[in-house]
Length: 173
Image (tube, rainbow, N blue to C red; front, side, top):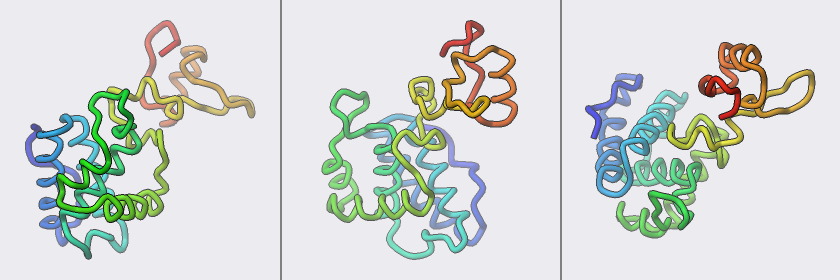
């Protein structure tokens, strides 16, 4: 598992953040993988930087469960065909909470940060290539997959932060 996070979080919230990511890291180590742990840390940090931060109230295990649930939802953790896979009920149980509690808190996170399924900001790095939302750009008013665009267009889209990385040299991801 990676070393303690270096995510930027206000000093006032650092103890809460550290407690939450301690729980998410341990959960990811036991049941998921390092990628999930990293994205969970990033989401916890984002919540810690929000003004006012929702992390200032509530229990750390509830936040940890909801953060993990949110990242899992974006990455289809609850789909049996995916690896890793875990039922939402089991995830909640591992944090000692009911599924409804975790699901409701995760919905609050998703609403607060405008997170949707396939959100490129919260997609696992290994799944980015297969996330169509990460590659859609508008070119002359038409929506297209940047992976099928010319290299010049891909480079400009990457420079502008519209795509996560430059696809392979053939122009198709």
